Length: 269
Ligand SMILES: Nc1ncnc2c1ncn2[C@@H]1O[C@H](COP(=O)(O)OP(=O)(O)OP(=O)(O)O)[C@@H](O)[C@H]1O
Image (cartoon, rainbow, N blue to C red; front, side, top):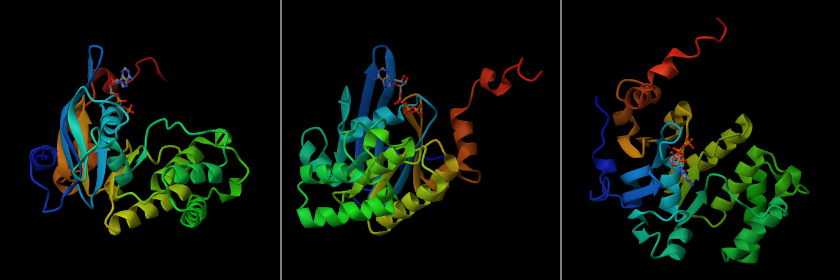
């Protein structure tokens, strides 16, 4: 079956399967100098879906997600979270979503507990509720053991986990996660997967970008493949991958050039 690019890549489409869109991108466009990073992307993430965004390096995933959540102003187009425009009503939109951006900047000279408490206070979470949530998040992320460690001294995986904790803290309805499993060890990854699966089972919506196809196939029910700034396929996982694997569909749609396939003639010859 040919991958679908219709329903989920059509910004003007009605709500998907009767569910309102958790995230709707309409004509998002971004150029850096003469380089078109994102080329009029339309995408609909249905409420309650676990949505995987995949694509080769430089495809435009991070740029799209950054525009979607209000971190990077688009040249054209709009992003709506549960119908709230991210750029004209940013406070309301940011209450509805939790974001793990690429290269997250955090106050570095705080411990994990101090950081979460600080972010929770900025979010206006009541002190008693906040203390309980912070403890639960530190336990689940297995960061309690590093109680005295400042975030500046965290490993890459620990930074990913504390970043995810800050995204979850205020109980958002939509999570937008750029490469959430990158550099996270398998035990912590299993814990994170369980949290995200539980979140979706309880009615939450997740959008994540990843290069790891088996992970996307394991977690996501809906996927979009981006290449050169455009969405080249989008829809339910089963429809997009057809009778093959997601990786095979990805390679078929995105390809690799002649040089990549040939490898290095001088290596181990
Ligand atoms: N701040 C920037 N200034 C100039 N060019 C940029 C900037 N950010 C991204 N780009 C360019 O935009 C294009 C898309 O980059 P982007 O980071 O969105 O891709 P990606 O799909 O997330 O890649 P990766 O999988 O490697 O993280 C690339 O050509 C990149 O070089």
